[in-house]
Image 1 (cartoon, rainbow, N blue to C red):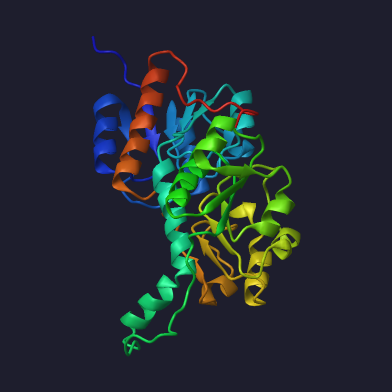
Image 2 (cartoon, rainbow, N blue to C red):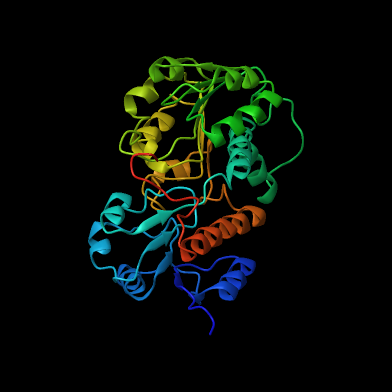
Length: 328
């Protein structure tokens, strides 16, 4: 008699190879439409399965955990961040949470570099001129940006992505500075040519580009606030490919509109798809729709990690990417 297959519900459409593999291995219910589940749909899913494959768009709080079915034992999040899940509440109910760390490191570092170049070299402005047919030809003073070689890059969060970005910045001739909750090993600093700043205020005063690469936690909420934005050089640029709420978005919009910052490149926002209208209107701001991890390779690798976590759990073992409160 074949072994009973674990019951899995997937909350969003995933790449076809991932969905096919899930169907091969588990008793899986896939979503027909690539739309976000409502709160009621999420609760119903949590009442009907043993494993919920959630994404960053699924906000699962303590009240929802309280309504989960008795069979739900694992929330296998499709993504590295878990700030959308009340992990402590899940733990109190013996529901494990796993994620997919390390998969999108290179993709996200690529996008941070791309945003940096897009803002400093005014690429969207040039693109808009060509597409609108308003470009009349080369001119010596048209669309003058600035080279990034020699500029000081300040990295807020020197984890996997921060280090991958530092390697790219080195290749462009940038000076690497960083602030992190803990100082990284001396060997890593030497490899990256990175200067550590214990005091974040002192670092933001001096850098030409500030890249946000830290997770969203209570400690990092509005870490880049109005006061710190006002410490920055008027010629400085901010790039954020991490989490939107690390930056006070309204304060950032005010400083940019006042000309107190040279520009910003954002892939994430404090209130999801509700973006400050000032940011939408400014020509020196590049806005992307949370696409830093959007490569076929990365999304399939994320799915493979989800499958490994579920398979390990189904075999009676601890998922390799289990998230533990207080160790995030």
